[in-house]
Length: 139
Image (cartoon, rainbow, N blue to C red; front, side, top):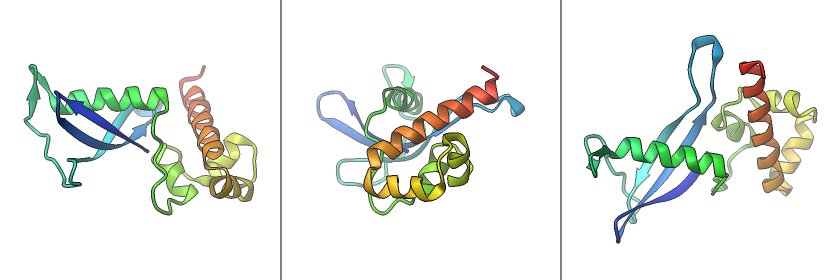
């Protein structure tokens, strides 16, 4: 999952939480993002359906920004007590066990990294997502 700020104009900021949906060749789905929440500066949910900016639906603009945020690796969510297994699922893997399989590391090691070296855990997770996508796409 990622969290980032989307700025509209001079003084409107939206806070976006999104998750990556990896490609799945079996059902012919391309990589995409799911916008989980859009909030204003006060933390209130913002309904974006039907909103248009410069002729483009706001939902499309936010989705594009989310894909760019994922590709650049900005602001990986570290809030609260997010379990390693929840991070794996949010990144598009089935479980922490799948991360262990893809990384070649025991789940206990991955859990320790998540607790003690969260940035490193996130790098391993991103690498595993890329590895999974390569397996799905056959590259």
